[in-house]
Length: 281
Length: 281
Image 1 (tube, rainbow over the protein chains, first blue to last red):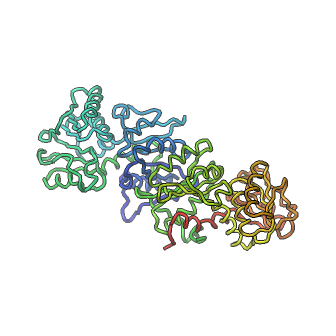
Image 2: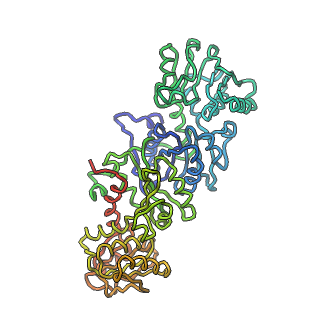
Image 3: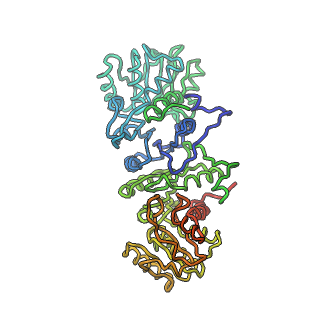
């Protein structure tokens, strides 16, 4: 699937000609121009012979409910993806949801069920862990510092605990949000998760940025990689720019970097299964 | 424009790869799978180098307002098209409208204005008349029987009168709707328009079907072409099937036929100008 999602110059991205019969998927974001999923999934649709298109949907937080309620009434909309800053709100706009969505309070995929209800799932965490494992960074038994307890951070926390990390430390300036998340996680994985004011970088094998810091060139660093031990991995969930300032500084220190794109490419198989989109021809 | 809208086998339809930066247009219909505009306009976008896609939006009359209010809040939606059965309702969902929309009470294109307001226009009538003239059927001075006083019929009536038909007779089983339309038209073009219970086919040069009859194979005929005089033209606004039963029976009688597709191809230049989409490269 990675090959189909990242076409080479010999195999340029294709797009199904959109016609009256085309089924629709939307990705909700604010901003939205940076989203990678349409450019990744539309060539997959074409390759699978699926008459569908994933379009970007730029919507502000204030308008999210109005827009989603409208899109849910569109007969040929089969699914919606939610990205920053809509993942928490999206979870509330579904009729039913998965356990991961319950724990994290965050969704990044909604689909229309056969009975017409909308079901919410969260693939950020499982996609992140798949990407980490595929890149040779084993989370099982690791000590992980996670910065950011928002939508993506919550999902990544649940998936890392599910994958068997030994100790997960989460930081976030929004203390009530952080405490509530850690309480929900500790109920499922007691003894392995805690909140902290600052990430314990000197005693971490993997440090993860799950904040939006790094989207803009003048953003401050989510954390400084200098305190990490030799051999540590710094993972960023920012996809654009590919090399955030955090990852550039990490590389300059001789530490291992893990790009945000791994999280998305790790999710594509999951999306296909979730939306019932079959297998490549 | 006709060439770009109807690609040959040597020049297959292309589609811009939809990405995060793509601007959106939607065509609202119920049903929607038969709409031709995405298949016609998307290759035009590609040819013009415009990063935009026109997608079908299947919405029931009961859900139209919810869906349109949602789509109007989407930051990268620049325009909406309305087709059967939404043209009258669409006119009411704009903040401002053209004179044609005022007269006909019907819109088939809404665009976002620089101030954020939505402006409604109707191209069905002007597109129909352009198509008729391009095919060599001059409406000026003609006697025309128009069947159907709905969205498309109203727009075609106004455009035919504007083009100088000598006598326009309109029929529709919905008498209040018919009377109201004829009154509005007569205020602008007195002495040239009237309502009738049955189309005066024996005394018509052009007969137009502006009803949905013919979309389904088991539909009854909107009118019988047998009573028309030799040399008369029968125009259908149905685009799919291309050869409706009405047009097949007309051809079998040796009369002239005019296909529904002319109305849409006649509109594409108008749409481009309306949405500020520039000229082909």
